[in-house]
Image (cartoon, rainbow, N blue to C red):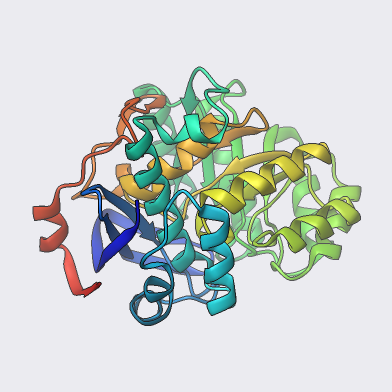
Length: 370
């Protein structure tokens, strides 16, 4: 089996409401959908969601790099040779993990379809019985977040993730306390600062003020380049610390392990380059006693399903936050969410169907490479 053709779609996924985090507000979500075809007639789908604030990638650039560099590199390759494909992509182009993730995910979809197996069976089989996901709340006024949190719990969500870090940290503290009061002490709450607290010392002060809110963890409180500062925070607070933007490569993970900088790591396919490197990072974290999560860059069913297959295959990947499809007002795939779990279909490959009519409707730019 060889890859013979690729179609690249630059799309704009409409959101039900703006997604607000510390460093950006998204009225809609730009992405790349990649369709790979083979000489056996099989089709595989991948996705890239570039983030200029995290990986330094941007949709137009990712589109061009796929068209002119990465796809010409992998045309003619057998998708089962995934390690070699990553070698070729890394030789052709440094960094750009979201672009590489699109190729990686599409290759796994092809491998699964060729083998007649869901992708998780190619990665180690089923390590979990269920795949839970939290309700993710954008940054808003404290009372608004509290009302949305109460509504989410009433609908069946079993955990909450609160975005904070946009403005004065005193307002963040108010947000978290207001939500905790609204939902009670039994509901797990995790907090994601997205680098919004600017110094380690300040982050320590804020986290210690939140001690009695019983947070599951605080995610990426300070800038992503400051792993030493993350380690300082972890030593001075009782609340567990998760690294997100700080962990993009295996080298980042090794530095986090060396400095004992995190209790948890948020491994995202868009940061690491796809399923293949993400699973290797999760196994490395496990060897150091660090728990892994597969997080989201707000992908569609294509990228979200890929992430859930990685979660399903590894015991040390104990949580996931792949909720992008729930945020879109129009969705190209049929990944099945049933509160509070997502259900993989068990079909071959990623196990989802792509609505190509809607995909083309949402497409801004398209290119075919043979």
